Image (cartoon, rainbow, N blue to C red; front, side, top):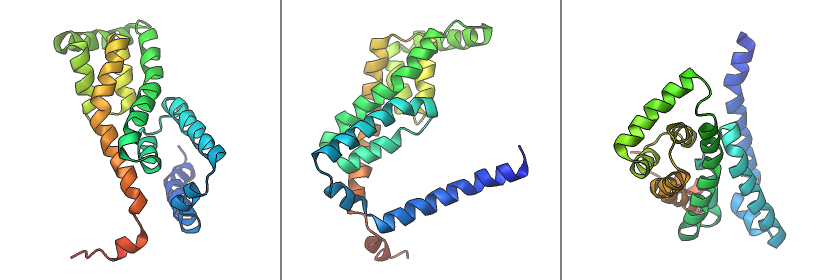
Length: 190
C-alpha cells in the first residue's frame, strides 16, 4: 500500500472523531430525540433495523446499536430489543457458514475441528460459552455454522450468552443520557 494511502487511512479516524465532537457541540442527542414526533420515531426504528441487517456484511461492531438502543429506550425495555437485534444480525453469517461448510479441504478441516469441539462441549453449552467470551459476534457465528450447530441451539445459545453483554451495553447507553461535559469538568483527577 502506498505511503500516502496509509497516512490517509491513519488520519481518517481523527477527522471522524472531530466531526462527531463538532456535531455534538451543535446538536445534543437528547434535544434531537425530544423533538422527534411519531414519524420520527418510526424512522429511527427503521434505521436501527437496517443497521442490524447490514451490520454483518460491513463488519460494524454490534455494541454500537446496543449502546444506541440503551440510550433511546433504557434498561428494562432495551434488553429484549438488543437481544432480538443481536439474533437477527448474527443469523446471516451463521447460515452462510453452514451453507459453505464443505466447500474445499481447508474449510472442511476447520469444520471438522469445530465439530469435535461441539461434540465435546455440546451444542448449547458451547454456544453459550462462546457468546459469553469477548470474541467478535461474527466469528462466533461463522464458527458455529462451520461446526454444524443446529439453528435452534444457535439461537438459544446466542440469546443466553449475549444476555449479560446486552445488559451491560444497554446500561452504558442509558447512563449516557445523564453524561455532560459539566460533569466531566467537576471530576477530581487526583
